[in-house]
Image (cartoon, rainbow, N blue to C red; front, top):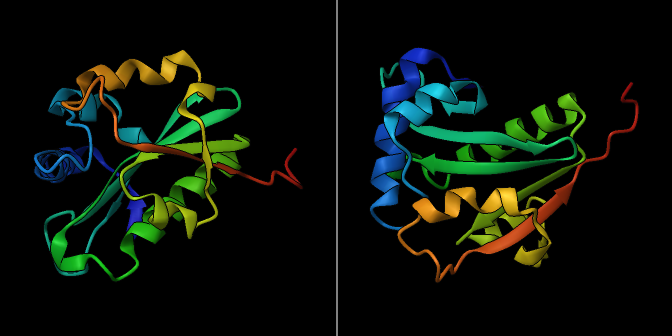
Length: 157
């Protein structure tokens, strides 16, 4: 089940992010930061399990731009479409909020291309976006690709 994160999920989200940060797949996030931004996260809660097995956040950068970040899914659930569902939940929230553009910085560009994201030059992103980059162990030699998806906001009032 994909749902909005609750405060009780913060430690599980931190555990997952920390695990994948060790492999360089996501930027590490301190537990305090996850608590502060818990409203940004969607989680995958497998039926009958006590632990969260996936997470993804929609971080609002500006009035017309948001970022999908910290997409993680436990190895045992990878390949089952959980990542797609988490990203789709974030995209729906962007649409509901009236945010027309969502970007991602990723080492898995093909995953996001399948979801309609298009490659862009990193230099086109606002400087505010790069605040997290200094936390990355790969900084300043970033090997991530930037991709953007435009969200149709028709019927939005």
